[in-house]
Length: 84
Image (tube, rainbow, N blue to C red; front, top):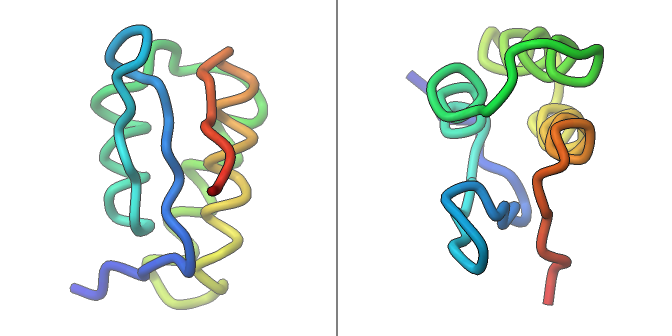
């Protein structure tokens, strides 16, 4: 299955202070949201899950999932490291 790679990965501080996880594509984002996310509620979280599904089914561009993934991280108070 197509992973729907992003143009630029997202680094999130998910596993503790200073421990960044790099998410490179929509499949990784969906797995992270479903299996590693600290909260499974909130509008941005739900939007990110929906968008990952749309992207993986080929109905939306991959970068839409990236944008919604970042919004879900902000909503969950997960630090997103700026691109360098």
